[in-house]
Length: 349
Image 1: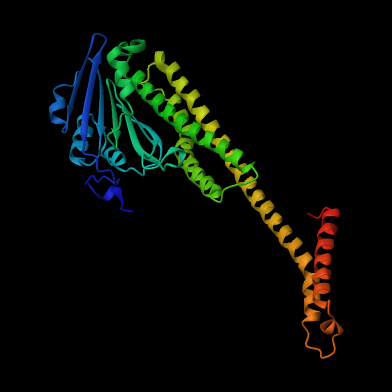
Image 2: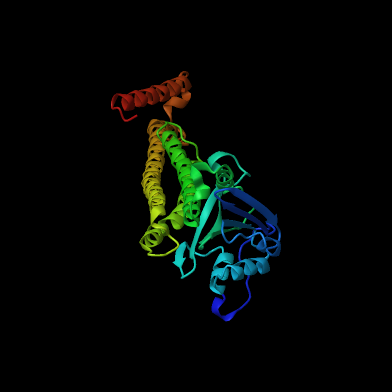
């Protein structure tokens, strides 16, 4: 890994091929204006100093435009690097003029069906300023479209509130994303539990459990650091966070606690399912060994008899007896049936 303090070049570390697109939504209590552009220059004149400016940057390919945005809003060069580093861990950072939040959002890929889809993640950077909120995303998604609808319709008088309220609304959308994903994983774990409790279990159940475990670990890796980081945000005595809006951030914290509890429940469920899966495998193996043992027990005496009659002694009275062959079959059948009923009577099988 290169030392980021020894370079002045910005490099996007992800793999998304989404072209950089900027969408600006500026709103006041009386109206909303929206502009879209592939570059930041045309949007600078549309920024309204007396309005709340919500700028979404989708696609991080064009690092020059990212740098222009960060420079215009007074963000440090290291912040620009963090925005483009998609492997950056979850964190909240504050300065005199802005608050930075880096986290991940998730979705299931569209290549497969249902829960067996791969859980994809993309980095999301939210930055709160005095009269602006910036959102940097790797892909061209509709993640915050419902927020834009709320702004246009002035739902709950969102246009009458400050920028930190919008910041809290965006955070709430992220928590909603986590709750949805965890709910889907939790439901699938219950389905797997029902499958494991049935008599016949598919051979691919273990694969499904491992897939859920991988999805769970991704969620945990993202959400767990938020417990400490978001607590730091709530304790911040920052002018950008108005006292009147603290209640909304507390509501987001409630949702975060629910997400963290769901993660712990998924952890316990995964552990129990793995134990149950191993136990079921052991039981199936024991059942198979029991069947093989019964077959062996029945055929061992028959093998003994055949071994005796298969010896090449010159004087064997049975060989010259007219009914010797029939008698041999009768004895072997009698021994086999007697052995089977003896095992059944002892309840060994």
